[in-house]
Image (cartoon, rainbow, N blue to C red):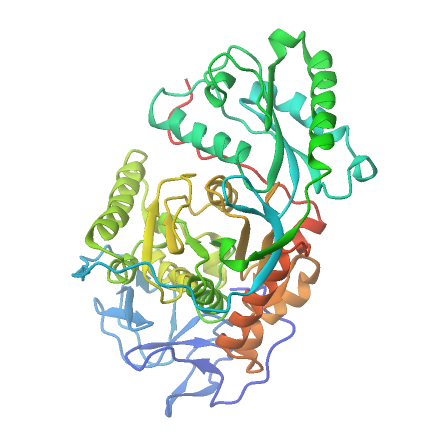
Length: 514
């Protein structure tokens, strides 16, 4: 098996060639590529690798009988398909997924919203009328359906950097493939939340809303009765405006009208409690749960302590680790709502004869992750240790400080879209294989789990959490670095994804195409 983590590797000895994450674990993680016969020490016990084991993959450090569970993080990640001897490579060939019965420990007391620690750090951001803070100042050109997507792109493309007022970050198109041929109900309601969340996002100073005119997702659903504009939104359809050319001309005029109003807006000093940090992982590897995710979890705890919000997402990637969040929920109601997200997602998968264990991608597996249970246990580390205060549906408005959870797919652009529409004004994205995704209006901070990938994709990465594996930094130090970097980004510092112009926007369609 090949690995993209070859190249720059940390120096290793028998004592530090593998990482045992918990004394109960019967596997350890290869910190470097291990050769056949290589001697390693796991908590003082000597093991000889019985085969080549790629960096990030699992090495058995104790005998595991066929049918016995395999433990990582002191949690079950699967069951042995056959007998596994110490020194064996543990992966898809001998480790199987199984859906285990969970024993949930529900909270028996109501947790109060914690009082923010003083003094609060400050950011420079745009204060909006509803009290939220914009970390950017965009004009959004939003298509209500795919039928208006091209016109939205033409309007946005009419404005280059030299055409923008100094305090406008850009004119960006929200083009997508949805908006018509939907089943009326949950699917259309969800799309409405997505589009409404963009139009009303704290990073959007003004918006143009475009429709074709006859689609399911009608533009009047986003405006007061009988109105085609508000101070914040100018709406039009191609059919009423006279076609593509006339719509583009009208849209360009409307953008310039927004410019005149926006010119007076300035960044001002605000408490950092205005930050709503979306948490995402993608292109994960085995080191995600050892370096970047725990470090981001520490940063999430620092944000929760000052009254800011950190929003965990990706329902398929908490499956098998949801019990850890249940016991941290602010009350029984919050815990039950989280479990309902799991149950509903399972029903959704069953419609298509799918499984949560379909989630680990080929890249995830090449990076050392074997089952969704293992992946989820590492992914949940992004949430830190703070109480779970709120559970949200996809693209639902974030209203609580502290740790929140949003029901999204694990697919990165779809999950980022939901987090953004819910109001996240900064997002942090950990990656081990390397991901370049961004968002049209929300800055996305990229955090590398390992140094080889960080060096290979340096232009796409903002923070190297691989230094934890290298032994040159601690989880807490990298977590503080992520926290400090988030404050800078909220105040205007550009992320790598922004510099490259990554603007992925993919709403989640949950029903059939009619």
